[in-house]
Amino acid sequence: MAKNGKLKKALAHPLFRPLRALYVWQNQQLVFGHDAYGPAGIYTPHEIQSTTKSLLALLVGILQGQGDFPEEDRPIYDYFPEYHHLNWQNGKDRITIRDLLTMRAGFDWNEGLVPYTQWLANHSNQMAQSQDWIEFALSRPMAHPPGQVFQYSSAHPILLTKIITQSTQKETAALFKEKLFSPLGIVDFWAPTSPHDSAIIGDLEMYPLDLLKIGRLVQQNGYWQGQEIIPPAQLQKLLSPQVFLPKGQAYGAMWWQQAFGPEKEELIYTWGYGGQHLFCCPSARCLF
Figure 1 (cartoon, rainbow, N blue to C red):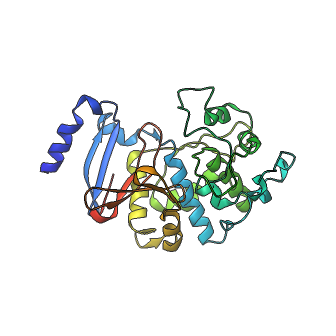
Figure 2 (cartoon, rainbow, N blue to C red; figure 1 turned 45 degrees about the vertical axis):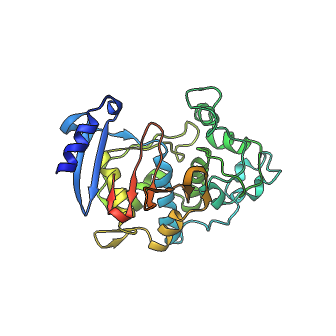
Figure 3 (spheres, rainbow, N blue to C red; figure 1 turned 135 degrees about the horizontal axis):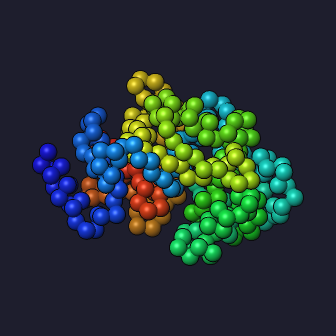
């Protein structure tokens, strides 16, 4: 309780005024909750931005575990026959599903370099404003051979949602509900769609406590109330570092990792624009 008091006092600092919600789960219980909207805040959906990418990776892991999604070494070219008229040269036809999951497709893409506030210059913003998100993404030239250079890109999950639809003949939003959210008791969520194709979704909106359930699923190695939601081997494959970045960061399959503190404790987390995060600290049995 003393620690909660210190946390409440810290959140009163002007630095944290933009903070809308913070919930802490430790030792199998909710130990702290703060919401700028008061008690009604638990029913206020938040756009989780690129944290959606990490949830999409979980869905891919679930589908792979059930044999409904191709393995990571499969070229994505096979799943876009209606876009074969585009230029697939310079290695684009060799991009694999693994390359999408680990942000190493090789596209010329400036999202990690140009701020989102520079609206017309950022490729992610340009894609969102285009009539066909898939065509915009696949039309980008190659800057690097696939599988070699990390380049953060919101085009990758967009392409993955199309591959999911091609593989399962179901829309991604419906699969989120069936395979991930409903088993966790998550009833309400919102998924914006592409103007060209309703099967292609953008960033999800969720309640904060529902997002916390996703962290609990990860913390419990893919199990929820004794039921396997995602095979543990698939989950660990998603979380395991694939790319090592500056300042001690690492990237798995759309999940981030970093060691922190003098003991170099492992932190597994999602990263969404505007501070939309889910942090999992296995050694402290804590997530927030």
